[in-house]
Image 1 (cartoon, rainbow, N blue to C red):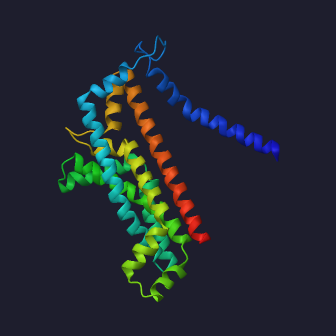
Image 2 (tube, rainbow, N blue to C red; image 1 turned 90 degrees about the horizontal axis):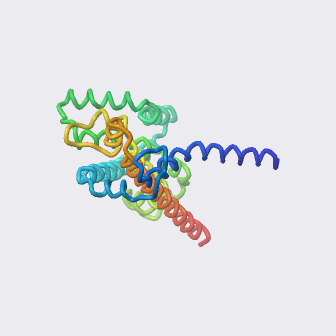
Image 3 (cartoon, one colour; image 1 turned 90 degrees about the vertical axis):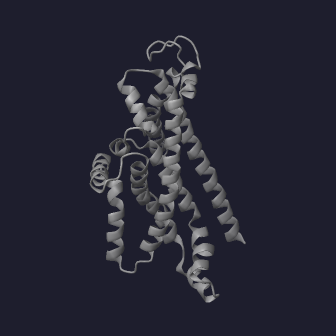
Amino acid sequence: MRKNGKLSNLYLIIVFIILYAPIFYLTYYSFNSGGTMHDFERFTWEWYKEVFHDTRLFIIVLNTLIVALLAAGISTVLGVIGAIAISNVRRNRTRNTLLSLNNVLIVSPDVIIGASFLIMFTMIGIKLGFISVLISHIAFSVPIVVIMVLPKLQEMSPTLVDAAKDLGASRWDVLSKVVLPFITPGIFAGFFMALTYSLDDFAVTFFVTGNGFSTLSVEIYSMARQGISLTINALSTLIFLFTMVLVVGYYFIAQRNNKAAGMGVRK
């Protein structure tokens, strides 16, 4: 048993090294004054200063954050409604069909999703830009929220709802004071997952973005095509740190919710 445990730990260490080594390599050279990713000359903040002094890049960062926050917020609302609707379906066959349809956008290749949205927006006359990117991000984020919220709904005992109804609670009271508080961890998980997916998405955004509007993922791709620039390293490092802050924030929120739930059970 101990030998298997050591092998498992060794395997995890190797996996994490493979995953994080390129990121640390990129971050390391973002402080290189030499301007290349081969020979480190001396420590500098030059490339980070370029990122913060680039007005166009600041606007693109703002566009990315606005799209991500709006997409995450709207998809969270729609995803919670969808998860509650699916959980209330009585017939197993119908419920499984709805779940399968929900999972289509998760398992489908991003290229196909992006091309499909591009064709749809062209056919119905929606100009490519902020609106098209926002709609696309909401579309692929909603299924993620549904997947995050459904397990919490399945954990909830039906007797809680029945007890609330027996005590005279209206449908809105049951939803707002019983169901939503119970599934709050799932809602937060769905929101943060949707936010992360929106911030990181490239393939779908590349298809549906238009002239005059861009996001960080598309901009980094365009910068990389022009040649190696350590500004890309600095920008990518900042995005990685921002994502880590989101993950840590979600962790502490989940821990606090778990403690609150534990105290509630003890009472």
